[in-house]
Length: 155
Image 1 (cartoon, one colour):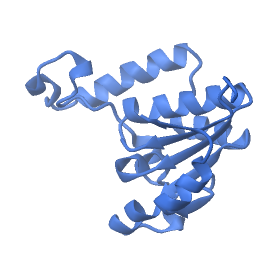
Image 2 (cartoon, helix red, strand yellow):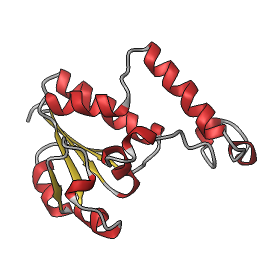
Image 3 (tube, rainbow, N blue to C red):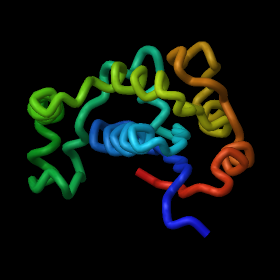
């Protein structure tokens, strides 16, 4: 049995900035190390691959304990936009690309990008709703087939 990880399958279920970026960073790091990587977008994580929503992902400020602020403060008008702007600026300073560009880079390395069929059906979406880098809409069973023999990571 090998002590090295050879394959990771990352489940993206959150549609917020802090829900999407960890998955992209993990997938990018895996590919940089020669590790096979697949991203499975489900529930609100579909926003990260949705043509009309990909460039409008925001930081969740309401009910987010990581923000270290009162929920009422997080709900003030413009707070999410401000937090998103500050976070995007910090990431840009670290040369972390915007989500759309990051996904293109990861796909170009050979990572698999898949949408969850149950979530796609639930939200009444089609393949045309997604960016070109999405390879397929697959079932959970098909995801498990692709994940076989590797690590599964939830973000």
